[in-house]
Image (spheres, rainbow, N blue to C red):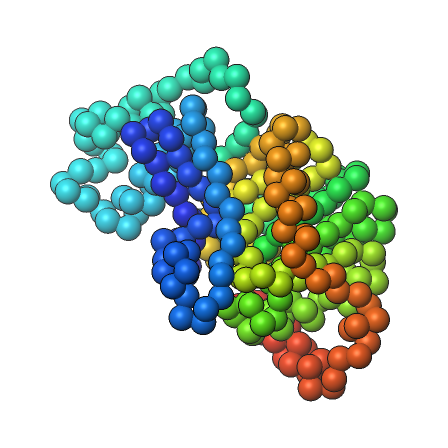
Length: 279
């Protein structure tokens, strides 16, 4: 298990989450020379308290009795401001409706981010756009994507190109699913100008998700993740515009190009696919 969440909160007033890490690759110092492109959302208002709560739970799980404080002690909770945090009532917010959704291996299956994503894709009527740096789908996700495409939904996947991905094996495993997706009518775009590390989901004109979770088995069932799910047309359109800008720097993958793959390439994809549950 791994804590894969990326959270920054400031004074309980401003919070950030998304795919952005703290690393040299984000300041142009990746040893490979590749440029990294990511996605981060800034939250204000009541939603920040949800991020604070997740951070405190992670902190005390990692550092029991940190600084002599305990979440079980009412006085310590008061000193940390947790009594106000958990008792805070919903304010008169005028911002977009959203959920801050934590997920992890200790939560019931129905609450995993996999279930949230699959449910959203399953009800899509017009559009399902996904960006993820690591694409290793489980069976329910593949079924949701292909079924959506079969019923006429515009399904698009924005993924790293092989030469820019920082994980060759994961890239091979993801490409092993291309043929089935293309046959169903999904469209696949590989980003050509650096490593695309953004993680987002756009459903129709009203639902948008940004967070730390990849579309892979590890994020779905093994990692601790956090996702902001927006139910707002303006936010969805803004994210769709960013997605569209990135599409301009991609190469679309077609079934015809897949037919020209060498035997060694297909064997490599098949081998990586066998390892999918471990990636």
